[in-house]
Amino acid sequence: MDSVPSVAIEYDPNILIEPEEFYKISDFSQSVYANDFIKDVVESVNYDQITQEELKKLTYICTIQNNIYFFQAISANYYIRKKWFSISELSLEENKPIITINDAADVIYNKTLDVIYFKKLSVANRIFKGLDQLYRQSTDLETQEFLDSDFLEVEGAYEITKVSIPNRKKIALIKDTLTRFTDVERQAIYDYTKDYGQVTFEDGKFKIETDEDLKYVLWGIEQRYYTTPIGGERRVANSVITI
Image (tube, rainbow, N blue to C red; front, top):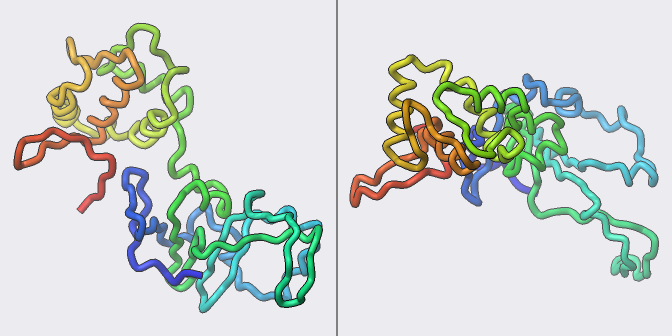
C-alpha cells in the first residue's frame, strides 16, 4: 500500500489535481463525515470474525500501519468467481470467490494529522458516506431561484428540467457568492462576463436560451475567464487554485 501523499491540496471542486496529487480534508475526525471506525481506538478483540456470508456485503477493506489507515472501496467488480489454481497449496479452487487488491489505496487517513487523502470524491464517498455533499447538485428550488435572478433572462424552451448536472453543481457552489458581493462588485462581474462575449447581454441581463449560455454565465461568476499577457489570447480555466 501507499505511503502518505507528499503532494495534497485541500479539497475544492474547482481544482483538478495532477496524476501524482491528492485531495485532502483536514481535521476530518471533527467533520460530520467521519465514522466511528476512525474516531475510536481500533482493537481487534472488539470486532467479531467476519463470516463467509457477510463477505458479500463488504463495502470497503482497510489496513492500519503506524496510525495510518489505507482504505479500498469494494464493489462487485472486485470479486473474482472463476476457477483458480493456488500455487502455494497446489490445488484447483472452485466456488471460492476472491477479492482483488489494488496497488494504491482509494483513501488514506492519517490519524496523527487527522487528514484524509483521496483522488476521487465519488469513491471516497463509498467509504465515508455523505462526502458527496461537498459537491452536491442544486435542488430544483435553488435552480429555479437562480434562473429567476434579475441579471438573467431565460428565453425559448430552456427551463429547469434542461439544466445539466454540471451546471446544477456549479449553482450549488456559487449560489451564495453573488449575495456577498456589493452592488459595485456585482456590476464588475457582469461587465467582466459580458466582455468575454460568450453569451448575449442586453438591457442589463444575460440571455439564456441554452445550457451552454448558462454555463458561460456561471464561468463568469466563478471568474474563470482570463487573457494571456503575451499574445492576448482569451481563455477559460478548467481548474482554479488560489495562491
